[in-house]
Image (cartoon, rainbow, N blue to C red; front, side):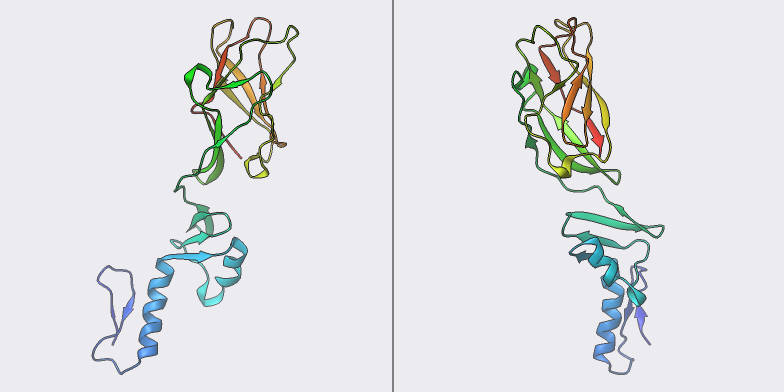
Length: 206
């Protein structure tokens, strides 16, 4: 009769005393090994259409979705994202009046990562400004081009970002990340005209 693997995974292995059945032995091995590996699918819908019936997903199963480049784990009957890998940083073009590398913190950039099962936008770098208009507007949109759809939150996100205390009576500003892809700063005023604003360590869920 078939034996099981020595790693306690319940994979059926054909025994020398079993009646010859090469197709059956291969199927038993495949049925035991494939669900324990990482299954690749073109998309979540492709996965849903394939993992049905006897091949229905079970807890502990991993899948890789090609269209979104995402590894997911089956937990408590649902697919959850596993936070792995790295994403490239993208430089953010700046509106007139702003410059890159404020306070030597590097170029203002963003990337999309998965953090604790949730897509997240991360920022790094800094921006600077040598002068402000004589009449300070209520807000400053710092990016010259809206973020792409993949980097826009499902609803408004508001985070705090640090700024210089030189020529400023405050050391933080408010940054709104809008659903339209704008990065808008609030808090600059006649008494708060910081020469640089930083974004290292700043992030928000999408």
